[in-house]
Image 1 (tube, rainbow, N blue to C red):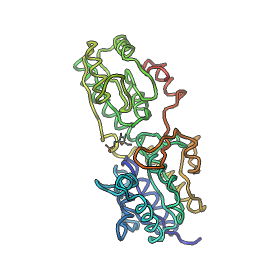
Image 2 (cartoon, rainbow, N blue to C red):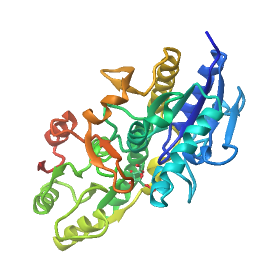
Image 3 (cartoon, helix red, strand yellow):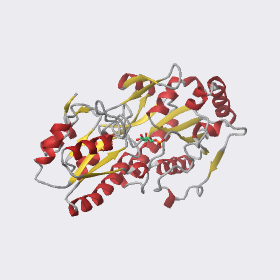
Image 4 (cartoon, rainbow, N blue to C red):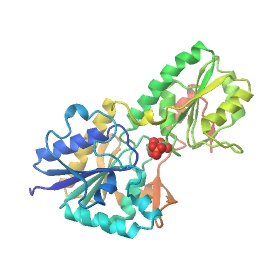
Length: 361
Ligand code: F6P
């Protein structure tokens, strides 16, 4: 088989597991006798002359570093040129031409884009840019809001980080007979809060997909046979007539009802932490799947886990499978999202076991 040159790029927010994916891609490519180029700072690295790249060899990213969070290739810097900043500064046409030219100049046969639903949506909407390379996407995000796959790299580590954070808070909560309202990340998707909430045995989990009632929440807490515990609140929830951070809104409501509580914000600690074994295995499976797809001359595909199998799915299905909305910042670009489905079995299990979640919207 002809030797190939492949590029690897990480885009969007970082998460744990990116380095494992890069490491496994590099190893698998080297074994096949391929050349591997890492593109720095996402699309920004393709916009300078010359493009900012790393040529990987066996030692560039040592095995012991592959478990570390963040991206060895970086995800971008303040002021980085990406689809959004190019659109807002009126340079989109120039940016698109630039990406296409750099991919050609680098002599890439394939580009592995490790990104979230925004990056993958953008790649499909601007697919002309990738005409000259095989485009293989690997889904990563702590939000787990990517259509066509039931697992994304970084999610498991984020759930673990939140679990550890809440486990520790629970001890001080117990000591002071009071409650903690903890706000999770996740954008408009409640998967992260739902999974972490089940893991810690939260008293309530509030997520954007499910309608909740503050009076019901208060009465649930009062009947919970405990005077301490954790209310997990996803950052995407809203409360009619209230503004501010969701955890603050809920906290004020609880205080007004006589429930002593504090708020806590794990923030970006959810995106870091040593990559869990599950995320490492997932990243390894997805890297292997991506390399096989390159070998099979596939393009415009994404690696995905469904029914416990890791296989590629076509990006042409990405918009049919998700909830589509217009990108507010980039003309003619749509984004496809996945959410917690109303019949998600974990929702029902949580309810069965006494966790307040609210009622279907
Ligand atoms: O999409 C990943 C994510 O961590 C979200 O959960 C969160 O809302 C957002 O990114 C935070 O972005 P930033 O790092 O730009 O504050």
